[in-house]
Length: 217
Image (cartoon, rainbow, N blue to C red; front, side, top):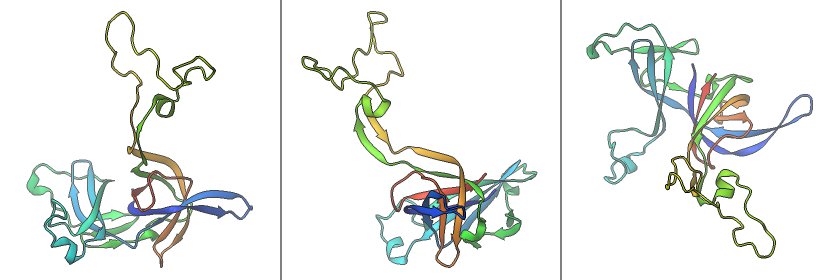
């Protein structure tokens, strides 16, 4: 299992050797630092840190609740292992193997953790669209659009005579977007280690400069 925290930069095009145009998303990350390694019974949890906090920001009292943190963003992932952990005191490990290499706390990893054509999945927060109606949120057909009609975009009846209430799960207007989305089956098209850039096939969730997590499949 490989994992990397990046920042989405935008979409572009990638031209294959056969001349096909492949839509792609460009992500950036100079490095990730391993913040913690915690072993459990059948796996090890590795915590990554991204974007170090400058001293000027960290000394600000209103910055965040976790004032001791050295990174603005932290994400964790699981690495399969056969640990025999019985007590909390036994949960102490110095290194873990990622992509065939043994790493420890304070070590840094870069985009070359992945290889070209690696199959990955991307986890991010989708764009928030605010309060939306049923036609946009759930794909309702809507009412008649001709003269005399008054319910062009209304949801229509939301209940019946029995049970004289609105049943749970009824599709109604409400907040749309800003959800945790996982897109699977993507591929790494290109890697630039010097600039910290990675080109991922297809579209990934989130706005520009949003934080996404790339995980190997």
